[in-house]
Image 1 (cartoon, helix red, strand yellow):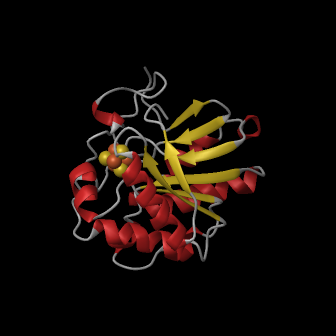
Image 2: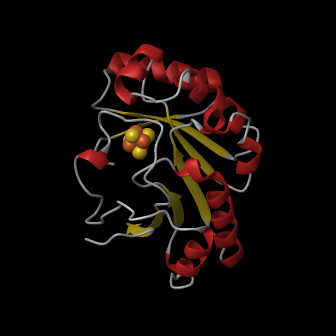
Length: 198
Ligand code: SF4
């Protein structure tokens, strides 16, 4: 097991910038297992300078995609994610995805989506058909999180090429997933049904 910022899964390089999160999802893998044999608990959050220094040892050419994801919500560190993504894109021609809980505008108290225009794909966890279900499954620490997630998806569409909402298949029923499909369609983005193992 290694404690690290970067980890590799398939053809992608994953980036684990924080262990902080404004959700406490019942299904969060942080509480159950590691990811691909990696220990993603960080002894301390790396600074942007640390990250760029570690990046020097990475051959970005061998990956199809960069994914900001890990044991926490990447956009808790919005500035660092944006800066590191830009640095990576300066070095190679590569797509960058951010997997997010969609709380960034609530966290920062303003619309931060224009800052995400350098990101190719934003995968936003919807996770539930309504606020009551969201609160039960995701146990957010912020008020109004469910509506904020949907609004974040709407606003992100103006700046990010590909915005996707996601749900986890074993957590909610088929009927709930169908309702989430309707919500995604109304926002104008695709819904990705993730398998729990993903
Ligand atoms: S949003 Fe992601 S990191 Fe945060 S608690 Fe839920 S599953 Fe875990």
